[in-house]
Length: 363
Image (cartoon, rainbow, N blue to C red; front, side, top):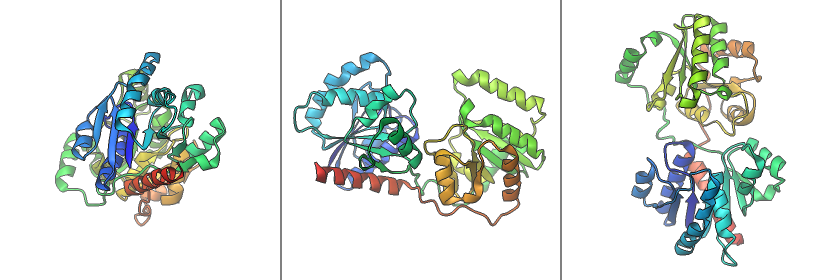
């Protein structure tokens, strides 16, 4: 097979990592892998693993980006892929217009819905393909409801994480020592963790309310995730709330961390408290993979993951009191652990390759 994947950029992220992992697997199995993007930090690893990268500014969300359709058409003629797999809306629009130029011998066109997209008219292009991959049942329901796509045109392939990276090897004492130097307030505490970028819908304010309701000096909350420039005002509101509730000694904003695997291992419970349904919930499977207890609201992708790996961690949406009670219950029970993670990169890759093979057999 000759596969061409198209996405905006190759910087750090779940979609980008999935593209690189799939590219590597394709090459290892004797196939040819091409990727079009504006480049980024993962480009070198993509090329090192045998993939071929073609640079094109398909990341710019402007009408003029559609002018790239002619250039993309020429690239498609040159590469002659069996399948084109688009991962984002603007690249999908460029691809849609490029493929309109074909009268015959058109490649099979596949998209992956990675989210519950807003602006249905703009997003509809993701459904104008030969086949759709959905990252969860939640997203599949959205696709069917919003775009009236028949069942046979959609395959659900949950996202996965690499079990060799998100492993259950014990934490090194040297890492703990460095952590305690940076965050001495967490020493000898039960740690509850919210991995989330600072934005309203990720439920950081609910996490603060949880810490306040627990009101226990032996339990410390950490929020791990970046604060973008556009969210500085909201971040200051959160910090002000922490101060008003006198929680400065009970909660720490740790910022973005490159050692997130170790932080998951360090935590006693990891939460997903997103107010709107998660399309999937990557942080939840990552935490479960390292063996840490996971909790979250019973909606969206988070509900799907918890239902399979750790049903004890499900809590009714926005019921902070129930969240507190379940938190204290799980903190006092060392025997309760998530089931072995079934949401793996290997499963995701193999399922995607099977979709490719099936589509080519039908074409």
